[in-house]
Image (tube, rainbow, N blue to C red; front, side):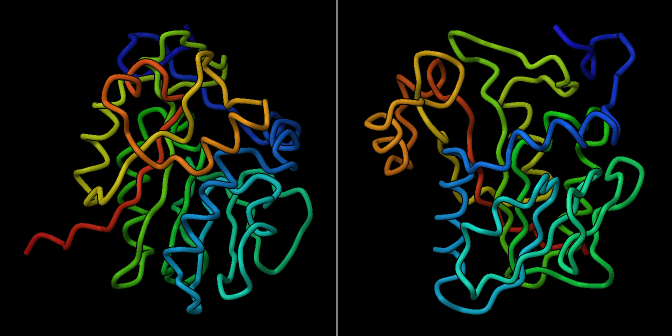
Amino acid sequence: MPDAVGSGRPVRYQRRDFWSEENLRYRKPHLRMEKAAKIISRLAAGQDHELLDVGCGPATLKGLLPANVHYHGLDIAIQESAPYLLEADLLKEPIRFGNRTFDIAVAQGFFEYVGEFQEQKFAEIAAVLAAGGRFVTSYVNFGHRDRDIYAPYNNVQPLPDFRQSLARYFRIDRMFPTSYNWHHREPLRQPFRAVNMRLNATIPVLAPRLAVQYLFICSPRPPVA
């Protein structure tokens, strides 16, 4: 098991030299990203929306979104410069894109790598959302029957703990698995992928053991007076 918060061992954070190679693996859209893109399109409902992609990697999500969703991405290793992309070490610097606010923020496969910074990053994302904004994020189901922990993860925790932490900053409007699979990875066969793309529901008996990851659709909590 990798070093993790609460393990009593030092937490290791991956830096730019790692991510400049690693995020190239995500140039091709995968099931979780395709599902997130559909959710974002529904949230935008054909209206102009500003979107911030936190930990955007090679900005593959941009190509899946409709023209009314105006994309901005942050990452520690930007592959190709563009006006809508900003390179920043998000564990050393706050999550923000100049002085912009956003109608939608998304963070996929991000919180598994943030260690003790988890709640700080929730607070920063909440701060850049415009009034009525929404936050879409993912998290691995570490309770899967065939649990497979990727070595660079440093924020391994039970899903209820992640949800409780998220709920301190956001109202969780919906949560459901990205996909169900016997193995702890997204299904590869097209019939199973097609079924999982349409299935946005938590099946109580199956989800705790067969959900690969979860997607959360959230709204920021109002500030405490």
